[in-house]
Each structure stands twice: as C-alpha cells, then as structure tokens.
Amino acid sequence: MTNSENTAENKQTILNAYVGFDTITQQIEKKSLKRGFQFNVMVVGQTGLGKSTLVNTIFASHLIESKGRLNADEPPRQTTEIEAVSHLIEENGVRLRLNIVDTPGYGDQVNNENCWEPIIKYIKDQHSAYLRKELTAQRERYIQDSRIHCCLFFITPSGHSLKPIDIVVLKKLSEVVNIVPVIAKSDSLTLEEREAFRQRIKAELAFHNINLYPYESHEDEEQEQALNESIRELIPFAIVGSERNVVIDGKAVRGRKTRWGVINVEDETHCEFVHLRNFLTRTHLQDLIETTAHIHYEAFRTKQLLAIKGSAQPSSPTPMSSPATPSTNAGVSPAAGSAR
Picture (cartoon, rainbow, N blue to C red):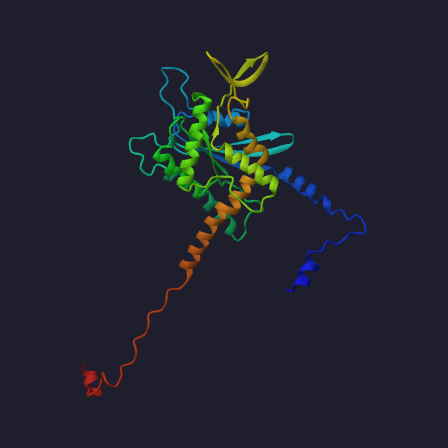
C-alpha cells in the first residue's frame, strides 16, 4: 500500500448531519448491565494472615468465613483444600458475580516441597475448562468465565525480607495469573519498618525478575501510565482488614481498637487499604479481566493448540528399502535367491 493510500485511509471525514453512532457506548452499557459482570479473585498465603477478613473488608460484606478461632476450646480451623465461593452482589444497578477462591495456607507443613502445585493446577484447569467450551462445535453464546482474574498474595509482616518459599511461589504464579502482593496485618509494623520492608521486597522482586501486575505497556495513554506508576510505587500494599465498626469522634468506621488507639482501615495515614480497594474495584477491575484473557489465557491457549496440532500431524513414513544394486547381488542366480 502506498503512502497516499495510507493518508486517505487515516483522513477523518466530516459528517454533514447527526448520524447517531455515538450512542454505541450506551448500547454496550445497556447490554452489559443486563448480562452482569464476572470477577474471580484468588487469595494465597500462609494460614492466619487474614485472607478471608481482607476480602470481606474490600467488598464491604460477609462473603467468606474467617478460619480464626473465636474460643480457646475450639480446634484449629484452616483451609485444607481449594474452595470456591460465589456471590452475586449489586451496586447502583450494576450486578457483579464475585467468585472467591480460598487456597490452603502454603508453607504450613514441615515438608513444603511443591506445595504450590495444587494452586497452579487449579488456575490452569480453569483455563483448560474455558478452552474446551470455546472449541466445542455448538458453544454457548456467553461462556461462563471461571478464569482467575486476580491473585492476592499475602506476605507475612516479618519486617525482614521475603522467605525463599515466597519467592518460588511468586515466580510460579506470575507466569499464569495477575498477582497483587499485600503486606498482611501491617499494623504490626511501625511506619518506618513498613517502608523499609516494602523496599526490601521490591528489591528482591526485581532481582528475581518477578513481573507483577500492572504490566508496563506502551499502548497506555499518559494518564494511565502515570496511574500505573503510582500503583507500582505502593506495591506491595500495606493493609489492615476489619469487619468490625469502631467509633471515632462519634462516627462508626471499620477498624481495630487497641490499647494504644484505634486503627481506621479507611484512613490512608494508617494503612493502604483504600488504595488497594480503589485499585481492584474502581480503576483496574476491567483491565484485570482483559489482561487475564489477552495475556495469561492467550499464552495458555496458544501452547495447548500448538501441542494439539503437533500431536495431530502424521508421523513421517518409514523409508522403503532401496532395491538391491547389481553389485550386491553379483554372482547370485535367481534359483539361488529362491532357495534362500
């Protein structure tokens, strides 16, 4: 194609009257609202880091049961296998089907070898299930999406550095899912300890080439790039979760009351919960879904289809033995050949 043809294609044509195709966004919104949205989030981390509590705090409702013991005589409770809980929540006419996947606390056992494999397998199984539905001859109009859109990775607030098992699990997960790491129960650290801990974690992630969401992209507009850069500065988010209300200056807020004072979950000077919630629900919810489809699922799909194509190709035929040359049969009569 010549440069003149390119210029003609890119030239904007002025309309002589109102056509109405600018309402396409309203049409899309109407259909989307009717169908509703799906968001699948997985929580990964050691037992006792408040995974269930944080999810309930983010979505301002009691969605999954905490495994913490309420009384001294209760036996220890923890997630022993991967569990998925689904809820339909609605806000201002927007319906969201929220699927929460709770995983067993990895690293809890004496022998933690390959303890991350069930988690990786579950994520890949959801991709595989979606691919099977996609490849059926008479597929559904809207395929139920169970692919994991976001993985909240809980880091123990040790104040030192990531544990070796954390690095291994993060590296494995980053290859198949969007990871959002958080420093759990960050109120156990001082502000100085928290920031020093964050910087050590960021240095370790960079050293081990662990690529976290949001990913860098040259396609993003300047405003989006600035937003993503500000989020990368905060990662890992230092968070505190609480489903209880405490009273501060006569106003009930979600927080934790200690002998030293009250920790307001939604106070940005206390923790970064508000930044995490806004990031997951108000600015990047749709992008998390699209990134899962266009990057992680697409990589899985390409690999699987290439494997199917390779196995379907017929194996190369066995070469036929070449006819004997006169030199090899020299001196052998037909009768002698028959006798053999």
